[in-house]
Length: 303
Image 1 (tube, rainbow, N blue to C red):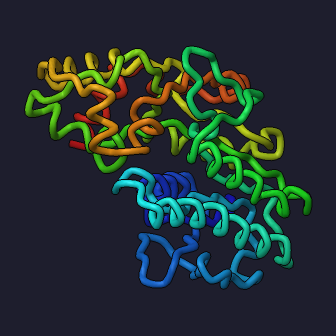
Image 2 (tube, one colour):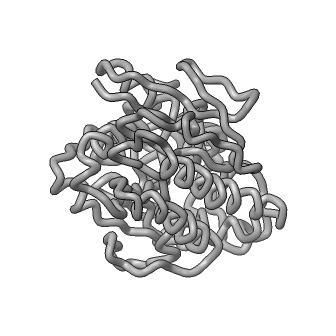
């Protein structure tokens, strides 16, 4: 049995991860802000003010850091972008500095990152050795990962899962798409040729458990996405087929930019075709490696 601390434990991924860890017998504690609620025992911190005592994070075998401002809930104003950046970079710095001071440090820190690190990769296959891309999210992810350096320098094995768009009906891109698609209003975005390195929510959570268990041998960045990325056109057609709706209403790039501004280029029109060879070589097996099976399971089980 391991003792695991999770930041962002009240979020979509954090809540599912906590449930799976408890199911297998681990002791789980959430590190949350005052006023946040989780279905597990919690401790409190204030990443915005830097308030985190070392004793609060001491005594855990592993720490999973998932906390951060949502990137897709509203248009990216200057204030929103500031919150996105600071919630990740400053929050990670506060956490890592406390871990370094802790009387008993964890063996492993799994500190979330994202595929946004790579920017727009076009048709290139992106591995963990690929260079950091251009754009706001690439800058955020680069600084987010660098903020873990104090923990790494202190001898903690730091794993940086670069997570692709997570498929769930309870949050994220799929949840937003289902409404229009069910009304027959779905369609290809932009050219439709851009790659999407999606991943089912169940596989994300299982992958995080795997990284907790094998973190000392998997330190560094690791891509977490299904092994079969698809183009936007393939995703659109597959989702329409699964929910039995037409997908004939395209969203031109110019219209997407008009509605969403900078978000359109970085979330909808960007192309990211990830290789997950490092994760597969470590012994992880996906339950939902193909998009159609993943969508059928998610939509039928989550509603």
